[in-house]
Image 1 (cartoon, rainbow, N blue to C red):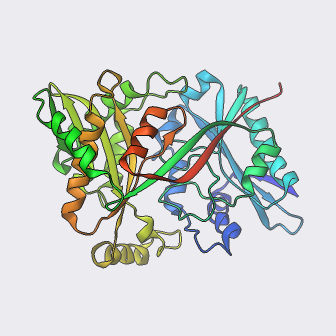
Image 2: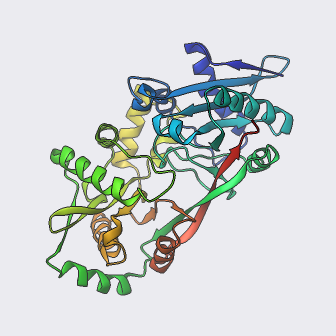
Image 3: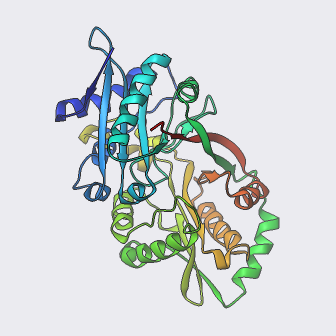
Length: 372
């Protein structure tokens, strides 16, 4: 076995496309779109590369067949914390093969001045490619990490320790505890201090600014907090334009100041399973066909945030009910996968459970401190 650094466009293509090799017998597997992964390595498309760095490697056997891959990376904020990132890991079921990949990524991060790494994580937003799936026999959502169950053993055999759990829940129209929460929501709606508004495509800039304000207040208390920028959110909103539903994204305001949001989009893996990992012109035609003539029934919550001063005042319920009522009017969206909640946020998890949602997926984010 030997490791080869991804140092050309051809090797980067091999790095991206080899992922499917590990899932040939998995009927639930839906490959990530190669265009999405390639964008993470493109300085014109990933703003984190302006102040950060990424490296990638493939692992080949003695017959030059790819049997693994890994990437290591960091942005400006990770450089300050000295905890880098490892992600896009794929490997055969072999501890020694995994060790070669992990050691390569770790040694690169050490040379860059890092003392540890989190993984498997994304070189970007937490709602994408984040965490190791530990719940078997589930359908992957768009841009969600999906992997064989033996990966957990590979990580833990290489001294990665659980940093936090990510709990993803699903709720349907039939299980939603409507009566209880509708009454709570009405109290908030009747309070003139608060207003609720869904996103409008022709005012993307305004809502992007509101998102940045809420996000950077809501998460700033966390030790690993990374402020989000307007450029990144505008790029995200613009990339979602082909699929977003205005009434799927709600904002809460207190005295006209942004204090909360809930962002959900159609679960597009219902469509991208027909693309086979490549959004070429044929796949785009299929996408449009299934988008408008297929039977889409699932939404996916991406992120849910409330400014600390306004938490536990009913705004969470107000946002959820607004979203629920909007989806009810569509007559076809009947299920929603909620944004993952970390085990460091038990209050939010308790509220999700009270809604009637059930945990459907568990991802682990690991951390490893290096021996220096």
